[in-house]
Amino acid sequence: MHWGIFFEEAPFGGVQYYQWLLHGLAVTVELSVCSWVVAFLAGSLFGIMRTLPHVAFRAAGGLYVAVFRNIPLIAQFFIWYLVVPELLPGDLGYALKAMDPEIQFFLLAAACLGLFTGGRICEQVRSGIQAQSQGQLNAGLALGLTLFQCYRHVIMPNAYRIIMPPMTSEILNMIKNSAVASTIGVIDLSAQANRLLEYSARPYESFIAITLAYVTLNFSVMLLMRLVERKVRLPGSAGGSHV
Amino acid sequence: MKKVFGGLLFLLLLIPCGAGAAPAAGELGGTLAKIKKDGVIIVGHRESSVPFSYYDSAQNVVGYAQDYSRLIVEAVKKKLGLGDLTVKLVPVTSQNRIPLLMNGTYDFECGSTTNNLERQKQVAFSNTFFIVGTQLLVHKDSPIKDFPDLKGRRVAVTAGTTSEKQLFFMNDRDKMDVQIISTPTFGDSFRALESGRAEAFFLDDVLLAGERSRAKNPSDWIIVGTPQSYEAYGCMMRKEDPEFKALVDETIAQAQLSGAAEKGYEKWFKQPIPPRNAVMDFDLSDAMKELFKHPNDKAFQ
Image: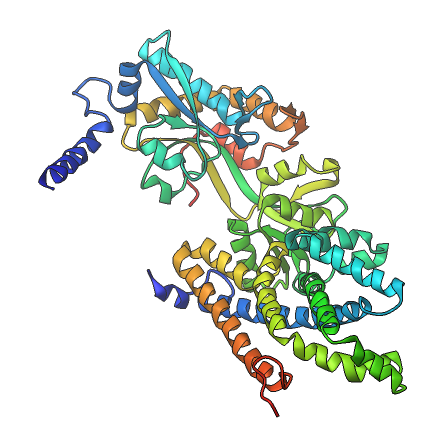
């Protein structure tokens, strides 16, 4: 073991090796945050659609889940990277490919990871809604609320509070899945570890360092989410305080 | 316990004997003595180093470097006066080629092994039979003609190659503002170029020619630029075996000076080659012309 390796000069960039890893960590965090925004919005939208009375909405939500949950993540990354730019109308596809590679790969990865995770969030949102008794919705409608108002003020606030714990697991999974983005050229934490390995020939140090980085990152998210869970837990539900 | 320990010690003592007994004065030593004693010469080869050493569709080992191997086997036969020398072929990879040579699994290898000072600490290299330079692959209508034209462009490199390191270094030094796309394999880098993501692909020229031969339209792509560094490919053999090295060097030098090497070059780099009749279409470089005039075993780094 030679831990001093991280403070040795990297072969290019005029930085030390540990700065490569820090840069990779920053990319992993940014990618996770952006993907989560996409996943949450897409998952909520399609999750709600899956519970609406109109069959067209339900079908669209079901299709979304079927597509994004049944294709392996790595295949989805390659579809976004290799196929999507060719399917876009001529100039748009070219403009995308001519973008700064760093930004381009990041956007493609955030879209891919976000929509993949969204497929899973979608099912949780649906189960959060369906876990509540039909009476909630009926009572809201009987009081004269529109369907939109029922979802906005009655159903969704409770649904999100119910699905908080599994949602934490999804966030942690998503952070780990973000490592697959390195296969389409995103220079994230795992890509930097590979680069460190190639140039310094130090496999143990490189991979122990990124293992610790991923564990620390996920552990912090877990603690943060535990605080949030405690704050929003439904009174009367398992473990909630009875007020 | 004592018995086990003694047994281990005995085994340890045996190991150096395996490398071949020291020759008596005036007799053949090293590899040549081993070949004469066994009546077998074991030749290392590569499985997919196109067009240097690889399998054709009938699973025969062929290639530009394999032709040199054949010449060397002939020379050994002649030198030892053995009409019926058995030739055994052993496939090797980039990872195992040095250990297998050192432990005597095979006697020599001509493939695509770079002769450098680092490796010379472990093994010996023959006269160089090929020189690669790092260059750029671009579209034939591209405005990029040489390295200064890369300013502000998107350039693909393969992660872990010397070219990647060189490009990052040049980018810093000359403030070129190049947008670098690092991909895991040669094929990925070429796809980045072919799809229009990258405007140039920076790698060893002969590998670029190999990627190009697999393109949808090979004639759309050209190799340009002043080589940024060179590497010398040589046949690899065990260290401290001057007789065998002299024989191999002499064989290679003769092929190069007699024009046979240039004919071989024509055959493997300008004509259709097995298994798919692709054409490398790779011109003889100035560095190679110079080598064929003055054979040598110089390493570039």
